[in-house]
Image (cartoon, rainbow, N blue to C red; front, top):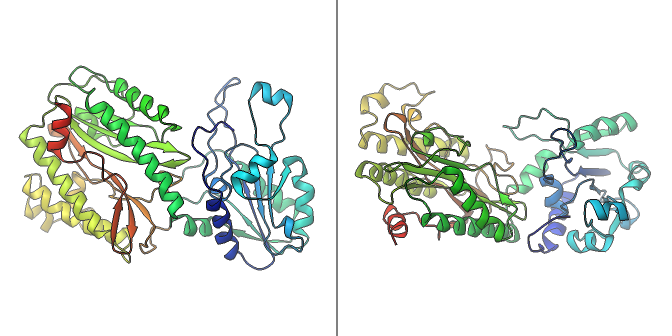
Length: 431
């Protein structure tokens, strides 16, 4: 248990479990496992990252944890059970503090806490009263999973030991629930965005010709961690000049040159919730006329896109609508001709040459958060808005990105206070 962040109100996790159990079939049980601590080589390990679904349901940020929900079990005390790794003097000395049972109750709101050694025996008792078993798996449509997770191992174990039960996927239910953020979740996301803002303001007075991309990365990380962030929400992109046209450039090793635009796609992680910001700033503190024209075109597309993030729209339609807006801006910039658009292959729109990625994705406990992309937008959904224009021939790539919450009538922009206008950025860099 090595968390830096302020404790989250257990009401969030209690309510999340209630929502899930209300959707479970009769005589059913749901089982969730923490992530593994992944190895590197020799005796090395990667930093532990909790499984997002387990965290969503418990707030527990520790390995070797299991949540079992069995809402119709006759003994009420066994309807919610959290199994935890039992500590020892040896573990305390070598690894540090682990949750006590009282701490786990205070964090999660689960009243029945057991040590993980008693899991199999307890499961045997629970399964005798159940017909259907919900098990978890990673069903994100862009996931590439080449290692066997703790959840995946348990699926095989459970089906081997209980072959006559009916097995169900819990992932679609979790995707449905997690797509709508509660006010407590939005508060965590707002904190992540506020920490990201502090990092951005820090580097505005730091960037100048001659600094390196990795020095800028270090400035962000310093600011994030001093504000109780876990660190970067994802591998940061600090891309100057032509590197900004490489969408997932993460080398961050070059010197920033006079006259270049610096594209920074960075976000802080706070309490496992993620911010996702992009800003494109002039290395020398002043945009050229051409750079400002492209910047303002991207900014106009961003603002028009925000107007389309309304209840009832959906990602496929939305991306098509934003593409049509981008077409007009690219024509005005002289990058496309009207004939290019008129003669384009509808499957490969002409604007994709200069704007080849999507405009928005769900955001939350995962940076590319889980959700059904065909589901209609609803209040409480949180999205990025990140159009861009990339012109390799001009060594120029500009992307701008904010994080917003859809409401009944409009949006809440979680990054409304982060400098956005070209003139404001110039003023701050030259203050």
